[in-house]
Image (tube, rainbow, N blue to C red; front, top):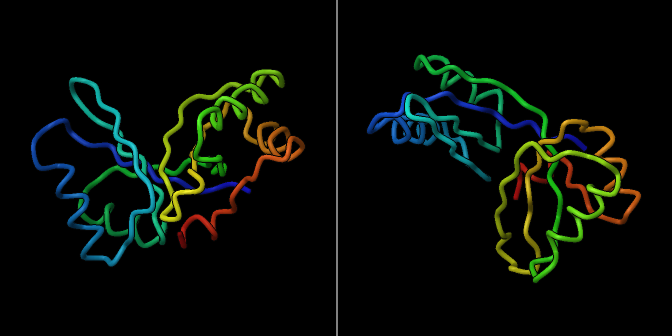
Length: 143
């Protein structure tokens, strides 16, 4: 139930993000979801892509530092309160959310939220026990 996310460390200067997307496009890598966080000196681009190994290889060949993190993808009803329900379940189980980002599927009926937890296995257990759909990596990569 884990999803592999790649993280790319970027200098905080014009053109670096464009360079990453060019490299991925040339390698025929499709970005499924992304998040960009920055400080004054550098940024961390977190990506869910359709081919992690190929993406990591292409980026490393161009001098980028690339890391891998396991995250969890959760399907959420795309309506008011959908996210709150999930966060309440996690809170009651004392599972901490380190960060998250989301995207809406093309159908518009559901959103997908990518979570990084302090205790991934416990989070997956709590979510599934509470009827919350956790999406497998191979399903997410193909969306």
